Amino acid sequence: VLHELPQCIEVEQWIELSESEWKGYYGAVGSRNLMSMRQATIGFGDSSSKLDRLRELVDYYKTTGEKVVVFSFFINTLDEMGNLLGDHFRIDGSVPPNKRMQIIDEFSNSNDFSAMICQINAGGVGVNLHAASVVIITEPQFKPTTEWQAIKRVHRMGQSRKVTVHRLLAKDTIDERIWELLEVKS
Image (tube, rainbow, N blue to C red; front, top):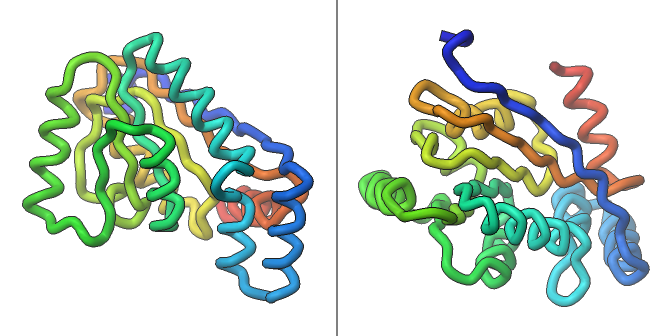
């Protein structure tokens, strides 16, 4: 089976935070709240280097007509991405399983470029997203299997194109430490 699958290319996109993002990040570090630190690497509103990079990637893939699936753990990140992308499909924990299949069918049957944003625990398991050929993961997860499962929603039997995976990682932040732990766990 593995020999029949097309190539899967994984790219680490190391992002430099802006000065205002660093202020928010250091505030989160001061709170000693791990989840706040993880979210702070994403930034929000007008100051988000990761979302700027996401916009660049999506704009590029619009020109190629490829479908994109973006994964995040955080609901508020999905909200921000939705605002950024405009027209998109979305699966998060609040979407019942029968509705998920309807959304996936609409995404799969849409012509040319489409974007699907998914909460990684809801859209990263038990669904088939092989209509897409691009995966973007907005923050590293604690278990490598969580990311592998999300990627395999796209890179699976039925996929006929090369799959490109972009991991958005903020330099010198908790992202870097989690990424190091993931490499050890892998």
